[in-house]
Image (cartoon, rainbow, N blue to C red; front, side):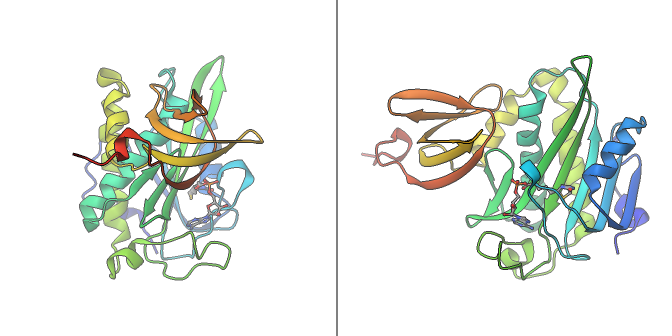
Length: 270
Ligand code: BT5
């Protein structure tokens, strides 16, 4: 069982993890963190649970995770009116989690727009941000992170799409160490937002993604658009070229169809 003292021991952050609430069972760490944030829990408060009975994905979907094998946590941030942070923060969180996994295991999970981390094309982590607006200002954002750490068997619905750090490395991965690295990388990128803006995070995200030049179809608001990925827009949207026109999508579910042979990033080098 994850315990507050072992999660905190050696944690090198100033704000994130200032308060850590651990639960054996909870409905959803995001729900709990939202309730705490509405009651003025400070920025950096973390809620972490061994088991969620109603772990949430986006759009009413479910996050499944066996107890005692994974990390399911939520962090309260209060970015104020940092422009565009709703679309950009998931990319910042993806970079932070990918870096944390890399420094602990040597494996670099790939960033898939908008909120997934993949290893070998399979999902190893998902991110769910939920914000609350007050008078057009972001009152708080809850950053929910689910990572498949030491789970090696998945339910039939997800067994072909999911992987874990243990499956990828062949060994058990220390969840407390991973937790600390995630908070440390998240804080490092978050505090650099004010002076540096999102530009550095966008380029780090792109360097950890292989989506550029791929043919994809994106389901968004009930319609499907197929095209070639050009990259990210400054506000964190996915830029697609479809039938000669560029589109910027701010939300959606992406299916990668393959490499576009006509894309310059995949043209043969001479
Ligand atoms: C996500 O949604 O990927 C966001 C997941 C966020 C989970 C964390 S856990 C801590 C915090 N508290 C919460 O209640 N939630 C957050 P989405 O992109 O909608 O993906 C959901 C889909 O991923 C599901 O419909 C399944 O197909 C698949 N899925 C579910 N569990 C999975 C797992 N463990 N590994 C890989 N894929 C999974």
